[in-house]
Amino acid sequence: MYAVIRTGGRQYRAEVGATIDVEKLPFAVGDTVNLDEVLLVADGGKATVGTPLVKGASVTATVVDQYRDRKQFVFKYTPKKRYRRLKGHRQHYTRLHIEAINPA
Image 1 (tube, rainbow, N blue to C red):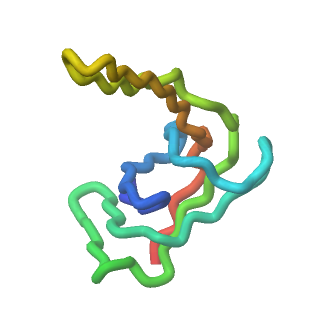
Image 2: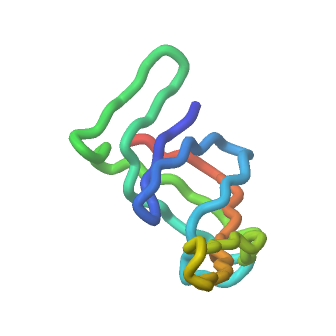
């Protein structure tokens, strides 16, 4: 059984026992999170597709870690003009362990 959930403007495939990394959620490590934006629930050969969400479906997950990704560098350069800019960015992520998928 798996579900497709939406959080942080992105879609993720969630299976029981799997660990997924999503954009930062405001929860502490060890908290239980209930994700209500379920787009699809599939069990074997049977799939329930929402329009746009599956009514009554949810995914329960536990926060495993709050961390920052490795630094991404953005370098701007204009030749012959002495223009150089170097910026760095580190995205914040939340690691979730999927505990249960609750179909409608």
